[in-house]
Length: 425
Image (cartoon, rainbow, N blue to C red; front, side, top):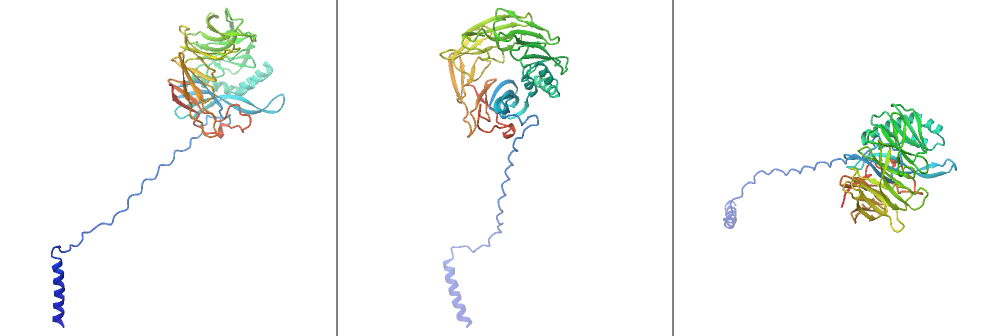
């Protein structure tokens, strides 16, 4: 059994060998490591925390329906915020809606609201029916706090950034309430009336020791007040008895530009630009423009004082005019009807007519800048002003003059996104 089986096996192996001569002998495989799993990707960074309201913001204030640029400082701006509130009308005792305003400091880089400044005690004094009642309101502790807030605001953003005129040394303060002028001296919160039938808020003059006020009722007359003494000096000049006071702008040289009208009987009139010499209490006419306006509060002065913009009302078409204040030559005159407006240090005038477009004019040409489209349910963006070579655009939370929808407070809105910056064409 052994012999035949061996031959058969050999034959079989021989056949296999013949067919495999060209192949090397199999080699034992080298050691192969088991593939390691790929490392898991790092976890995504957590989303940045949602912005929160700074403690310096009063969240009970009304949410914005509009903005007006007051002052700029670096990457921050001070704006007057407008909005609507519900209140009970004193005579009818019915709940109605009305406009209100406060000041807000906003970061231009983020559009975040950093601080608010509200002056409700002054507003309360302004709504009283007598000097005695107004003085009683001004004597309260909340008014002392508002005076300190005004000092802080003026220190941060400069003279006339608050509704109270604060002297350069911080000791004296002047405000208007209920058509009266009130003065607090020597760093105290004790107010006294020093002027009657006031036409506008007092404006601090560049020397920091005087203010300009308009007194007299229908035909307001400019007066310069010495703050340490409270003495009033009437301004004399060709038009000082007949002009209704409008906007006034204190200049760095100590004088004041005043926009005034001589149509106090509500007839066809003209806007006159005058310069008030606050050292000699005199007024000089610079230029007058025929117009149908009754109020001269339709102007803007560039931050460098080089250009003055006026809106002139005409029966056919309102006009926007920009003057060079060094020569009083016109540098721009175009058709326009500004709502929000500003003029920059290059003499460009820009305004918003609430259609989602900003008009920027220089010379006789006007460019259009389309504002960002609002998100669903949000009101249109509005033009606010110039910051260097940029346009500052406001993003309201509520539609202006809203009569039906529930009104919002700042607490109902985000702390950020109120202002944006775009290029000037």
